Image 1 (cartoon, one colour):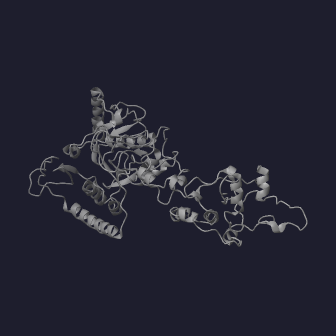
Image 2 (cartoon, helix red, strand yellow):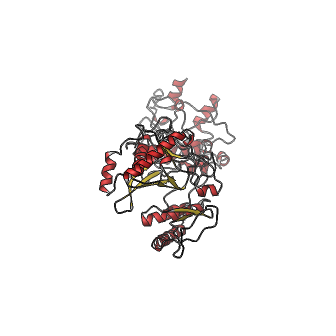
Image 3 (tube, rainbow, N blue to C red):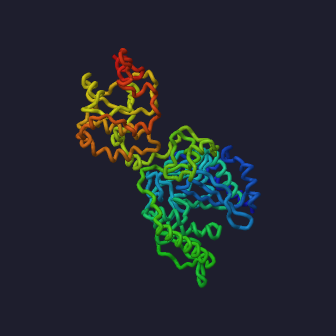
Length: 520
């Protein structure tokens, strides 16, 4: 049996080599099953050990499932019991487009649906190391008039409508497909989904216009989940049909045409019953999630595809795009993990979410108090009495021709000998008053203070603040600042009372006057 299957595979290779058909898998793949080193790499020892542990034969049939949102490719393999079991999950390095099926040539969409991969679709001479053709468009796609060609699963981590892996990953996947053909499998099934078809994902995307299509392919997903057998796929009336069989009284199998009316068929009761039970359970959970108010996923994000988190963590400014990040794990935490293959330097990560960027506050929306003062203009807020008629320092600034003196607080204590510069007033129609500036200085020292909340309160009130009457003539210490900054040194805050009777005035080393004199 094995020798006959091998002979068939070799004959198919010779036929394809003779034909020399040119395909452009992502625009540049040439089909030829000629022997070469890349296409004949052995299955890695770790995978062989996993097969032994899971009661699988090297050449038993395989089945592949792809998930965009999770950015994962699963390889399932038939065990000696006849059912399929998961052999290995591969993170997808890059896929392009959006969640949803491919519709037309050039839309950058990676296909979704059920496809069949035969030996003729294996491409050992791909420009992307190794690849295999997904078989898009299938009969369903063609019935809907969908266009596109040579959509591949390949290496090189670069996608224009394909599912791109690393070269090391595609070498393993290719070897598993090759061995299944040598074992007699005529074609392996490729199932491509927008996400794992769970109730929570269906609830998150319940407003997506692709939901009718997704519910249809979920039927096949459910058939595989309950049987662990490759579902038989047919098409009629421009829809998918799974595991169809002839009725008990029929003499021959039903004939399906994707564009024609469905023939009489039945689904075996043991399968239909198990699927109904699963779907009833899923629908109950879905209804609970919707009633609970599960947030709906954002649509029309402007992001081109996705990337598995393990790869995004390895790329500067990498992003998972439309794929999910690690729940509870940041990309920085994954940066130390080993990548499953070589990431080429030309890899282009998914574009950022333009909607999120547009909705973020612009720099102009930030309150004035949130902007750090220039380093050359370091200013200190002293615990002096409130200003009278502009205050001493404001008057000093006006005498200099600089306008009102700006008093703000720095985020760190200045050195004792630092010189002070008087900043000119802001050229706005309603400059902030000394009281508002002092309040801003205080709040900047409050731990955990949210300055964005202050912006909403302060922004509409500059004119009112400017019109506020002058402070009472009697000086009062500003206890707010004293409560939020360290105690003053003996030389700080000393006014005229520190002068000794009969002695010449003594200038404090860190007083504004000495600093101003130094500046002059």
